Length: 312
Image (cartoon, rainbow, N blue to C red; front, side):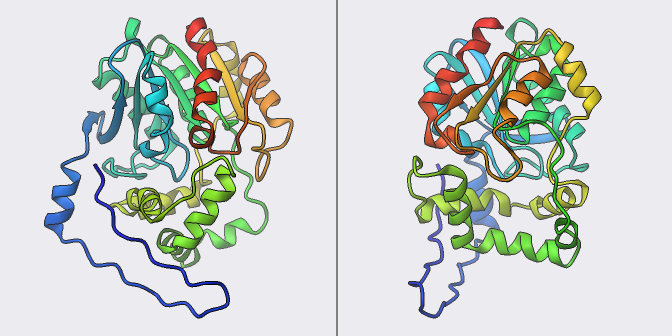
């Protein structure tokens, strides 16, 4: 399905580096390639999505920051044995059309519009699983339209604002933020490094095709603008304390799934339990993974989320 462009080659450590320019893709090539993707109109956003399975209850998979529908390619087919599975690109983050504003309220309208466009409402309402920052989006969707959400799963995400620390803001103003975004998207080495650190030894190595699969959706029209906007307003979607209290009181079934080794950065050993307590979920379910368990341990993730379908 994907037309892949060879990634830049990295020389061995200690040798000089030679930049390799990729051949530019003509507008006609880009248009022909995009026609192979699947879209649906979700509110005001023409939304790219993937689908697996044709029977059973529905589940919508929501990506986190710097992720797209492709993040779920290992988990989707496993869940499809018993469910209709959908994954989509948030606006400004992949192949979905970039439509302002790039904020969490718009993300919530997009996911609810996506579900409505596919007939996933009422008795056919889906479970919504949000990874990392996507947890806040599914949490807010459940508050906005509880009768159209059969259950929610917070996966490796607490829906809290990201604490950037004292050094963050200086790097998130122009020209620094623009340079950082472009550097990250053009560097094969950096993409592999982030993937390895977040995914761990259980994930398959990221080859040239894999690098491009992660990079290209984030090089689409409008994505840089969205990433810059996110950097300015706090980087990731989040819920307020009042919204978390309201979610705790909600009757929507809830579940927290967490990687046993996902304790770097913003999370601590207490994060999974405190997240479950905050939203009114049972004790968290752990899977052997770092932050990208859907890639390193897809079968374990599929098994972990079964309780939310039973309770919904």
